[in-house]
Image 1 (cartoon, rainbow, N blue to C red):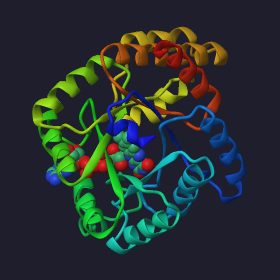
Image 2 (image 1 turned 135 degrees about the vertical axis):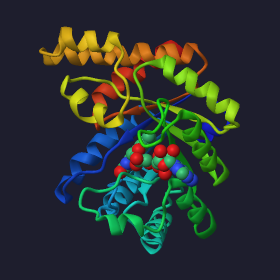
Image 3 (image 1 turned 90 degrees about the vertical axis):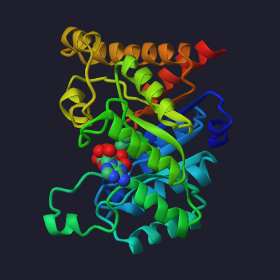
Image 4 (image 1 turned 60 degrees about the vertical axis):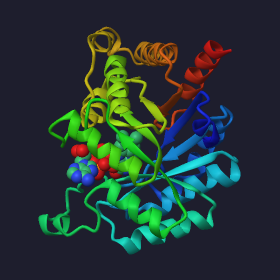
Length: 288
Ligand code: FAD
């Protein structure tokens, strides 16, 4: 439950992505059914930066909220949207009883011209949050970056911008994925000194195939520590060994976070319920 975050209890939440095609909802629902059995505190659903497929995010979030009875957080990006587009999505979420959004700027789509980018309605996620706060009943979370956002010239400046999200009404934050906990601990300390008091969920992505490093991970800008690079070098060629080693790395990473007082873990499930289950069971054993 999202309430557990506000009450500072330990939480485990998941991220999923919506189906890429309209004909794939049935299998997406089956994945969600399996994830639901793990009783996460909430499930967040990604959103295309352009916003044109927002209906799929709403439909998946609605299934999580209304069919599974689990709190849903719908991601929402503003880089390619006008005010009226966001209001339409907000209304649709409201009709489906989805209360929370992860309010994001999004990355500039490749086909967006300089003119379109310069004249967008919202420059930053915090501008969108102010707008949503004033004009809708949505509750909001924001994104944060333990190794700083790639566009920002310094961590100090990125944290000043992060503080604006808290001031604009974000109730909690979800972090970019990271593999080196030391970066996360340093980030938490700096965020605390900056006056960020809202709960922060640590974003963990298990690396179960060497291909992920070239795609998702390089896009995230997160550094790959030697222990993980060695693991990929040793097991990358064997599908099953890499899967096991990657899950084991994520479990050890989460245990270390928990031992160091981190209460909220957000797992990037990549729509893989079996993997999420193995990790969830290992963590619950640790907690009980
Ligand atoms: P912002 O908070 O606007 O920050 C972007 C940059 O602008 C930063 O460098 C920041 O320091 C700077 N900045 C912020 N506010 C100000 C200000 N007031 N003045 C000057 N500079 C400012 N993308 C998707 O397309 N769909 C998704 O579903 C999605 N889910 C995500 C989930 C998580 C947990 C995370 C961490 C990222 C996700 N992203 C997603 C990626 C995200 O859209 C990109 O990282 C994007 O580049 C930044 O989004 P933001 O909301 O953090 O932007």
